[in-house]
Structure formats: C-alpha cells, structure tokens
Amino acid sequence: MLVTGASGFVGTQIVRQLARNGHTVRLVARPEAARRLAVNFPGSAIVECEDLFAQSAEWWAETCAGVNAIVHAAWYVNPADYLDSEQNAACVSGSFKMAQGAARAGVNHFVGVGTCMEYALPSDRLDINSPTAPSTVYGACKLALFEILNGLFEDTDVRFSWCRLFYLYGEGENEKRLYPYLRRCLEAGEKAQLGSGTQLRDYLDVEVAGARIADVIDTGQVGAINICSGHAVSIRQFAEGIADRYGRRDLLEFGIHQPHPRDPSAVVGVPNFVVEGSKRDERS
Image 1 (cartoon, rainbow, N blue to C red):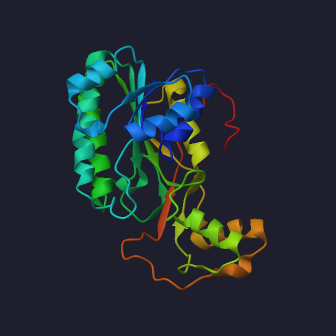
Image 2 (tube, one colour):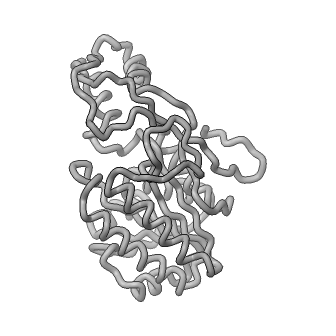
C-alpha cells in the first residue's frame, strides 16, 4: 500500500491501521517527515520527495511500481489559510498526475480523502446524495478532484473510493484547534474562552477515522464514503464533555467570541461506510 500524508494528523492513523490489518506500506514524504516516519514505522519503505504535488505522472508511475493500492491523504492544510489558499489548486493538479501515474502502474485501488465542506451547508443530515455546493476554495478543490478522478477511473479497472471527513479530533491535532486548546486550558487551570457553542457538529476521534479509511482497502467499498459518527453534538456539549474529564466546567466561558460569518450552524453526516463481513465495528 502506498500512502501520502503519512506523517499528518489523519495519515498517521491510516498507516497504523494498515499495519494492523497486515499490509506492507510504502510512504511518500518530505525529507524531514521521512526521518520521523522511519522511527515511527520501522521497516516501511519510504520515498523521499520535497513536493509530491510537483511530480509528473511518469514519476508517479515509477513510484507506484508494485503497489496494489494508494491512500492519498496529503493536502495543503496550514490552519492559517488553507480554506482559501491557491495551494489547493496545486494539490488538485498534483493529485491528478498522481492518479494518472497510478493507473499506468497498474494500481488496483485509489482511496482519496475528501471533506464534508464539499456539501451544501448547513445541514444536520448529510448523506452522500446530499447537494454539493462548497463555499470555500478548499471544499471546491476537493470536490473538483473527486469529480476529476471519477471521470479518470470510470473506464479503467481501478477502484475509486472517496472518504469525506467531518470534524475530527484527537492525537496529533494542530494546537490551534478546539480540542487541544480546551485541554491546554483545562490542564493549566485557565479559563477557556469560547463562542456561544450552539453550532451542531459531527465529531469523530481521528483514530477511528483513520481506521475506517484504512479498512476501505479491505472492504473494497467504492464511491463517496462519509467518515463520520452520525451524531449531532453542539460545540458546547463537546467542550463540556472534555471539561467533565477534569471536573472543571467552571473554566468554560461561553459567548466570548462571535462566530465566523462562514461558520455553518450545522454539519452532521450520515455514515455509509461498510464494515468488513457482518461484524460490528468495535471502534464505533
């Protein structure tokens, strides 16, 4: 299995689950990330590449030689500007060349990672047939890649899966996001200043999300797949649940910040991932 973005928030969990499932992995990463991956995943084949989105289809065909499946988790995700950065367009172009090379190399299965931001928002019931109408460059580029790859693989033997992520939290999360901020404040005994917390979200631990994406390789499920919990939880409820672990709800200050104008009131998915065989997914 070839994995991109293996050192990232979601990619790390994907590689761990692939290894648990008995797959050998080949990881494409920048040199600095490659050194960390060599420590975290000893025995994995690692291909160093300064910018995987700048590579040609020919380079990808050579890199994918002998690969059965790809899980493409890499993308530009700088929290400061990823929603509207022009780097999103470079990710689309580079991913298209990757897919072309993969097809030439005889890869059987291409698993891409999308986002709930491809859908028309807000909505508290987003299934894979819900209307798509992204309001950010990031969401628009993810949706564009989904449609491009659908067309590219339509008349080939390559199976194509597109895993749309909702609101993930957990190990390795960027420190500027809500979950790490709350934990940092609560552990320090400091006030956590929040908005009203009324928005509904579909939260899922990144470990569960990474496992479900990796499991797509074994189930063979194709098409759009919502990687979500299916449960609507307000931001306030989410924050209170974390505070309760510390017994410090008193440190939560709601109503301090105004919501961002583009922050949807509800983003909740309808899961459609297939569990291998008939066994219940114990990670749910």
